[in-house]
Image (cartoon, rainbow, N blue to C red):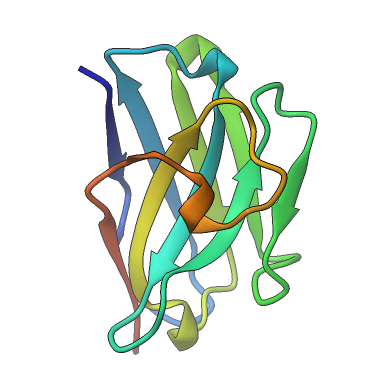
Length: 124
């Protein structure tokens, strides 16, 4: 059974950092592109960052460029999202998703396999 599990969310003050993890079970991530998406209350789900299967291609939403970094460790079957300089507007449920083959765009509708999400709250 293909499963993705996110972890690492929580409450953090503005300017703080969190690292989200997306661990896969039941399949190997080696051949899958992985995306991080988020959805805030009353807002549409949006792409945050995506990484190709090889890790050689990444992209970021303009709102997180320079603050967030996506990476993958295929040996651990895990993808990470390092989030620095967090802002209140980063508050959302964060989801990771997997797709094979790699989609050309970091759009949630291109991804078939989803985790359950992890809450990130940025507040003082």
